Length: 279
Length: 279
Image 1: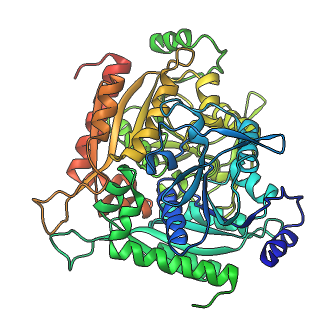
Image 2: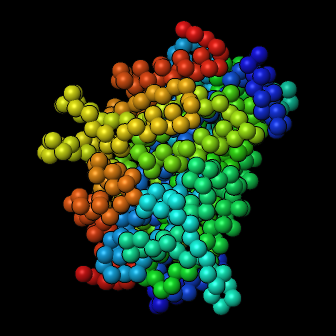
Image 3: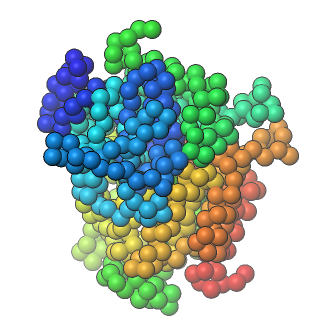
């Protein structure tokens, strides 16, 4: 609670919507699409849950929600129930996570043709009116860019920190730097906890000693240094990650040692930054 | 001109902004980010120009404009000039293309914190107030998703067709299907000319007989069949594509035979669909 209050004060420029029972909110973001934000958000939520934290996972990507596909929940619709005369959404539960997604409310094939103000309202309502219960962490997966969703999150909610996902190449770095700059703006001031460099290299299973840098190298390290970000973790590309996520079983990607290791370093760095734990 | 008129009539539900001198507008889109939309848009524009068409390339991605990086134009600012008492933007010229990007107007490190209505206005102004001159094709690169930019383009401009870019995995397909569904909506009705499946596989240079399907396989084919789209082309992942684009020289990626071949099939299919050419 101490931490939570501090973060409210820190972002005191905007009046925030209180999130009773939710200790910490972590946003997973990137200026760039397709870098693996949802995969990292799911991996982070699963790794936190594996350490016995109570974890919620919210998918705030209205135009391309990936969390329903990732957890094989595409056909499921959340129910509602009454609490103190107020109708609340019941989050779906899977792999120990409480999950909510804008994607649960739409036909998966249907494009959501909402302009910004409608996105903002839907998002606020979904975060506020879901019965999260007591959570240690609410992990929020966001759409690419720095649009209406991000503006809404940082101005209306107390965000404890952001995990930035990138791929190594220059074309990603330019977009990702924009997002980092946004979170660091003095009137926004959300701490960047870590950089995850995804698809960092590829090692063919038949040639375990070879590394192919398909998307260049050094992008994550560059962002870390330039922006003075405490932690960088790298996740290589491999067929298992894609297969696990496509099969609706992201927990399976942890069977890859390099993925498991990267996510466990990420969790430790978040604990250190947010809870001051040093283990 | 015949074609242009037909397309105006086809989309007659909305009153369109006339684009004098611009014969055809092709939109490059994807429901998913990071699939290589900008790389494909640049490759398509360059391949059309190589066939002696007059080509413009417009980058409509306000939150993550990639075209300035791709063409090494990050430090350049467009100038304006007067035409009949009206101030018009002079597009930048490179590799035979007339190029305009929302990115030219902002510091590359700065996030553009605009909500939807501002994006819409900036986009309309940039398309309308650029002196394109006579163009056979204006290729428009778009941001991920189906948000304000796409709604503006399909309702305010006469779009001849859209090229959809995807990667093979299920998590991309779900998002990309949404975009296709949007373009096919009866009141929007923009023909989907082709699917480009990018990062289709990887062949390590040291092992030319091997193919690694890093992001699964079959996604592009599935979208083609389900949506009855005339053409599918596949572009494999390789280090050259990323290196060329990062170096600001996308024309160099054509040195890879599989890239050159895929783009030339794409151009032929567009000519066939739009101009009725059969060569």
